Length: 274
Image (cartoon, rainbow, N blue to C red; front, side, top):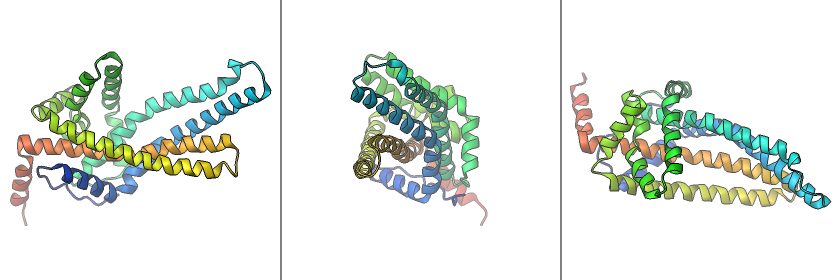
């Protein structure tokens, strides 16, 4: 269990957001990174096996001069397909558990693995619906800027669900109202966090690629590729909390600026008995 330290509510500038991201991630690293990695281990294993089997079949048929046989690729394609289905089922739990843990931490409540997972299970269908809606919009909308505009307007959906205990439709409406009038500022913060997230991911990916190059000297290149692909999935998982923390911080920052939530917190603190 992580020590409960409430977020000190105040208007956050860009530098404050970045500082709070690393402060919260460092304080709850084992919890947040653990949630992300645990849910990503099955995906990493299936991705590694799928690429190992696929490359083995491709290289094996090419070296033997045989005509490509699609039936030979069935096991690897099935593994990749099963991985996609598991990814679809696990992703709402991953994002829900991370959001719940971060929101509990920001509120100063005890943060536990089981508490975060229970909260994610209670909101599973709501989180899944939200993620599916974002994916469908990205496919249906021909204009990518339109998708960006709506996605930024709904950025606070998950924090609103877990902090205010509301459903998907109410959370979408709540997020839209909070972002209204501050869309560009919210977009700029998210853009910087996405860049930061990508830089961290690239750094981890470069380290893994170097490891693959060294490992291929001692083991089969197929196995090295499989381990690399599995490692990429886990490295990506370690960057998930960065974005989720930023989204929760944006949610509270919007509430401070539009609803004076910091003054409400201060009034509660002053009114509390000594």
